[in-house]
Amino acid sequence: MILFPHCKINLGLHIIARRPDGYHDIETLFYPVRQLRDALELLHGSTAPDEPAAPTDIAFSSSGLTIDCAPEKNLCVKACRLLQTDFPDRFPADGLRLHLHKTIPFGAGLGGGSADATATLQALNQLLGLGLTTEQLTPYAARLGSDTVFFLHDTPMLGSGRGERLTPYPDLDLSGWWLKLVKPDLNISTAEAYAGVTPHLPTAPLSEILRQPVEQWRETLVNDFEEPLSARYPQLRAIREALYSEGAAYAALSGSGSTVFGLFRQEPAQKSRSVNYFTHVERL
Image 1 (tube, rainbow, N blue to C red):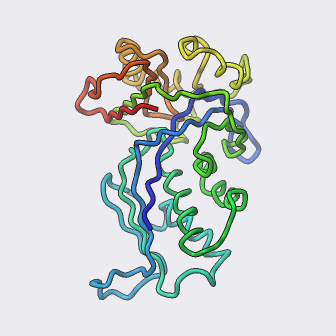
Image 2: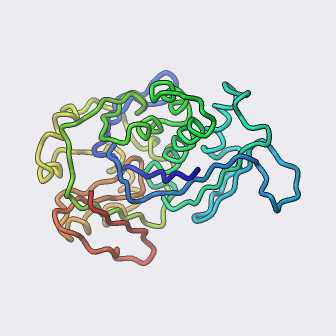
Image 3: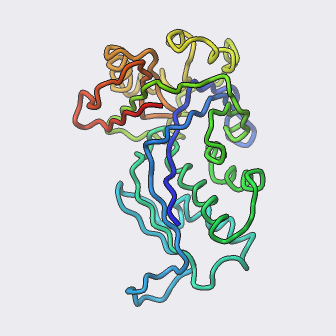
């Protein structure tokens, strides 16, 4: 079975309060970006036919962008373990084999790892015939990350709590707009991003701000991570200003960075101003 998990951007991100459990209450709008995708393959049997090594219960391999963590720490493998714990009798006796071809950049605020983890849950649900509904898969996804639950829905959603409490937001449709993603040669961890922000109540609910025309968002739609991170990494501010100079109606940091995106009425140039920058352009 092969799935193609795609990424997301955040439209606005308010850090409202620090919680007793160490997480933060946030408010954000998750918007799907469907043409920037990884590829995830799941197969019965943890050892390929031409591999003589003794099989393990879950074998993980990858290609594309280098994944610099041990297999057991990869979110795809963690997703397998969650379902294996609750449904041990449904896992094949000869194990499972996972291969991930990584295209979505790491540390980019695009949710690529979360998308892969959620796709693993969905694939196992089908492959093993578990018959779990989206509602039943939700607590598994929530245990893997703060934005993993969004990828079960694949439609614009307002996120609250850690980001796992979702409310459909049908008032926003960016169909026909062009999106440009620009990521410098910089990875920002979530811990680093949160270390620079002071939680506060927003001046207006995000749901109200998003009802304004996109051209007005520049003055009202804020990602609370953006200013402290731009102060530390000036290239983020430079990318945002470059997107505006190219004609973006709105440009901002996605999630906790380091990708900056721009929304355009007309198709923007594919290339960024630096060969070290990852870029992606698609029509929403």
